[in-house]
Length: 138
Image 1 (tube, helix red, strand yellow):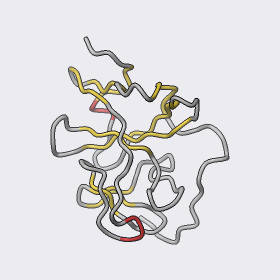
Image 2 (cartoon, one colour; image 1 turned 120 degrees about the vertical axis):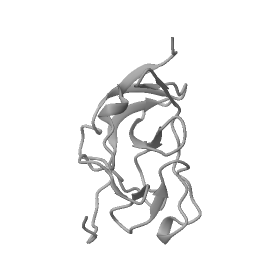
Image 3 (cartoon, one colour; image 1 turned 135 degrees about the vertical axis):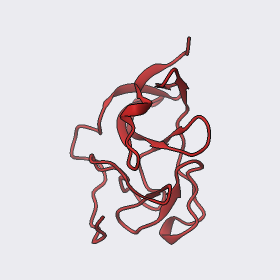
């Protein structure tokens, strides 16, 4: 038995792409989190859904853009490794996406991070989130 909240099944996480959900941090702030496939165990990683360069969503509701096992920021094109969250190019070079602890049990993904509480599938349901002024298309 895992001590956490079920988010989704592993099969629900698109490849390539991401699965978006909203969690609440210890200060009652809503935060978007994405699940992405990773080639290392446990096979799925969870990252806060914001570019480290500026307040820009990586998944704007239709899945994060991906290229060669990397998450692509839609604003400036920085690329983050799906397994480590590290970025080695573009405006976000030298930074790492904040991770969220999860567990995979019997093909199900559970939120196990003591700093977050699961709220719902999908993104934050307001218009106050980051916006894109990108010219990059995928």
